[in-house]
Length: 408
Image 1 (cartoon, rainbow, N blue to C red):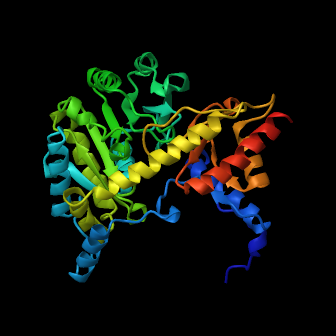
Image 2 (cartoon, rainbow, N blue to C red; image 1 turned 30 degrees about the vertical axis):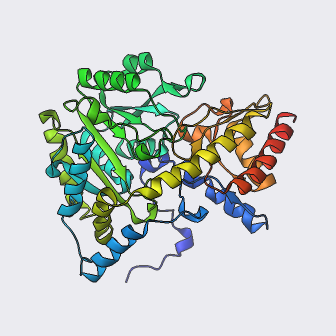
């Protein structure tokens, strides 16, 4: 018989080295919030872009579509690329908006996040580079770290309404570049890019023959009307577009997303690779796929109401924060995010400010360095989905703490 060994004397089981590079600040900071709550302080969560906890509701016709799918027996695995009615609805939607695609070039995914991960897995090997904006959505850097590929950050300029620095993008494209990521409308800044900037980004990707990954999940939540699809500006450019039910259709927990792969033959091998990887994960949640057709072909009147509520909150946010001499704030033009800047005292970081704010006031934001910004610049992200009355009280406390922090 083998000798018995005390488990306490054994070394910890080793984990993958790639995990060290995998960070996701939006979720990671919640651990600190739990400590604050355990100490008896109420936490006001402004860290995750989920409208549901703030009183917004999934449209009833989407719920009815999922319920019908369940009752009709659609509770098993689906095709890995998604059910036909959903893929056809996505193809019709994109085609009607100027990006002609067929259903066989559309894949239903577990939210936009899975579509992004499938694409990066299909195009990026260890050591390859992908251009991502700074600030960025941290999913991109987390997935690239997992793949052993490298995120190369291009600058967006807060003094120019967070617009991309096109010269910086051009300078950073190299033989190792596999994709250019564009998040527009933007998370975490709420920026919307003008048509000339979009066309320039497309031209850079097209000339370099790299994939332009167009993260357009907030496209229908722009305050001045739906943002045009990138693929409508040049249908033959190598563009893959992503969206989902999560934001504009108020169903984030359903994990119902989709991607549309542009019609150019240059993307045929990429599309085949994405489908191959999709086979390995079986499928996205089955019943929820049946809400995609209902969403894209049914009543969208909830979006006008939602946008009106968001614009009201955005205006309140900018007004209150801009009035503080300790804060700067660029007005968002879409979605429910803003990235203000606190003027830091010497030697302090954005994380110092955010953790101090949490511990003193219970307000939970996310520090800008979690999105790839320099820690000494003082940026942080706010999700402004709470009611105007709640936000007003929150901003009273935030402004007071910023004044106290700067005076330290």
